[in-house]
Length: 108
Image 1 (cartoon, one colour):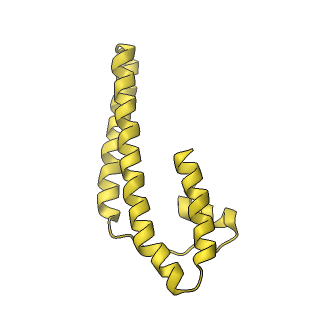
Image 2 (tube, one colour; image 1 turned 135 degrees about the vertical axis):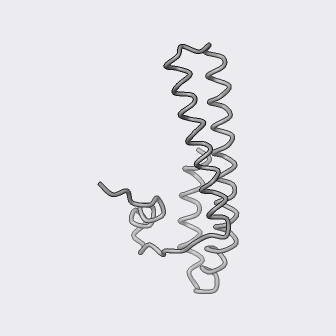
Image 3 (cartoon, rainbow, N blue to C red; image 1 turned 45 degrees about the horizontal axis):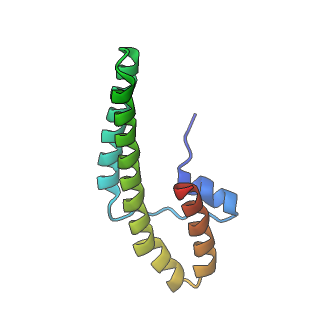
């Protein structure tokens, strides 16, 4: 079973062709996601070991904050690269619609 990258799924939903690209902070994002993944495994272990509920909730809050920070990095990269490219290519309106959809899901 292969996993389709989120950007390709979003583009497919919007009826656009996926545009493969690499962002400036790709490695930074991947490192942060690996740390978050480890943190989530730690939370799972806490639950398996019957840790105190408040302690588990604090760790869940930390993971949420870390994910929000990763989302902010990705958003900044998107604005600096994808949106600039869309303006240059005359595709700003479509790119803005995609961004609005993504932001609604990210924030909401």
